[in-house]
Length: 352
Image 1: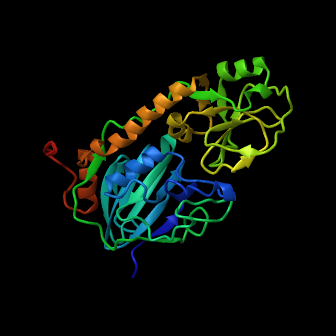
Image 2 (image 1 turned 180 degrees about the vertical axis):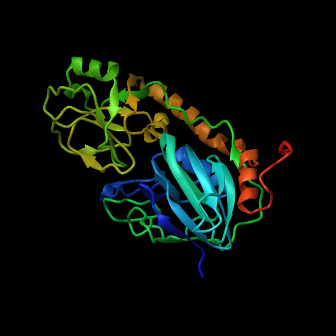
């Protein structure tokens, strides 16, 4: 039997994502990829994968799946989320774990991932990755185009995702320490390229106002509710290229920040572009979150990009040996009937 994860419950929106398919926008193919590439990298490094490996991007509510392999080493990174490992499909309680650490599961065990907290997305990586054929160099799922990932769509109950490894390697558990996933107080933008299509009053309202992430938000774009922008030169332009983070404003005046699954060209003026260093945090935004913007120069954006790259490069140094908490260990012992319900000693500190 081929090693796999068998999906019992897919969660709200669970897709396979990596860092995207680069180099095909001139053919009309969006880059796609993870909304939060920082957390994707962290999840992969926790299980010993390359940072670019495909993983499950889990939005808001996580999946439940069965391990159909001798064993598997897994890790979640990104949002705070409750992870429960149950002994089998009929068990109701099991070992409780948290994100930002690796864990091991055995054949027949069930992994249940709860709702996300503090972020819209969390990433589940499996040691070795998924045995999925890349499309144009990437396993990222582009739902609108029905390409990539698992059958070009979000996961559904009954899916069986093949794994590259039939068993997880014998290895220590690891956790991530000190990785900053916080949101900036204001998202930094560079004005343009069509900011002259808007009145000065609208530009001021955009930079001084507060917006709310609309329920209409998806992987393609974040629609913002708040101060409407007034066009002074019409709301149609000759279609041009769309950059990640472009803030497009259609005729209704509501800003739309274009994200991972954005179209490759667009015919509405773009008032600003969110800087690349702030985009992973923007990708973690939840429906109802409040967002405001701050104008900076291109030179400042370049400096912040350099600092962001340093943060990315530092992730491997933040992977340290981990251990289960006392509560996790107690739950595991109780689940396996190894103790009667009392632990009379404290766990020793981990050996680093």
